[in-house]
Length: 488
Image 1: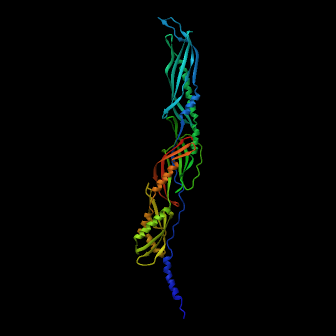
Image 2: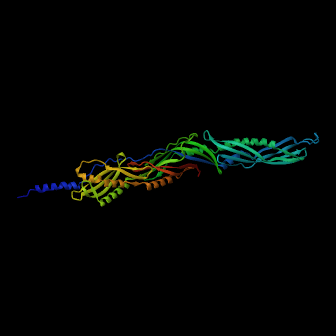
Image 3: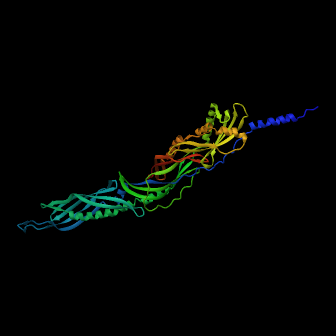
């Protein structure tokens, strides 16, 4: 008589149930994944100092070329060079006439000054002969004077320099000589000519300043300031885009042998993360205006922590917790093993934490294996680079009885506190590294004949952002920025 297979088959089916229950992976549903990344940070308004420098030697050369070495010549008859002598009101000798012949020449024109004052000096030498005095004598007179001009410079209209001059001269030695016991001076004739020279300087200095063509240089500065600067190549790739909007006039200043025009450019500064943004469109050089706001360059430096950095930290923390032992309320001590941890961004500014685990009560019972999803809210305190996590909870609900033990395990205070602790991340090392990259990128950057130099002097940490690319910490940097004209 053959044995019926029904009994063993039924027994196998009964055994298969709990075996399948303890070996088939179970868990709650994974929360939605947020894929978007931070690509752009808030715009900043910056004021960049723009010093444009000219060599005073160039202005000197221009004035020298415009001003002849011989300022004037004289060849004229004077009816009275020596007045006749009188005794008791009676003229006893006649007036003596003469012929004045000579010239007045100049030396090298020199420019100097300090601050907003430009000083111009021009030495003048006179050599005038009184010939045929009374038809007999001839005498030569010499003299010297200093022509001095104090100029105040400004920019008007379409970036044209103007000068307000206060010009004077003084004789060191009046041109004159002794003839027949009398002193003959030629100051009146010399003064008439010096007045003309003064007027000429008033006309020529502004023209020489205009030949410096500050507008041409400023147009180059303006056009080259529309640029995009690479802050970092990776982790994350970041770009600073500068868009000038206004140009304000400061003042001319004399610094050593240079004439410096200081301007202030107001610019829009934007930080982009990811692909390089297009350069801003160049606009024409605006007319001189006023620039508001405090001087300095302001921009964001992005600091990014990839979620892959957090996953092994959570794994190690949970494994250490399991080695110390875990009590599940209502169950008691359990044997828990934690495996792969997955972290990514989810809705509501939270991060999802998936934990693969298996758990078995120590007093007996089946082993439950699966993956349970938690979520946490990362945050940072004001101006802090330390990121922490709070509000750790189940990411999604489940009604499956098979995962009750896993859910209970991951819901324990011990586990959730461990997860929160493991999600702490100190951005300080990344922060310092990225700041160093940014400083190197814009610390001294040449564009043609112009040099952009920046010195970061103050940083502040913004509010943490949860993005698809990772935990994103915006750091606002402020510094001194200058664009200088430095021809190669």
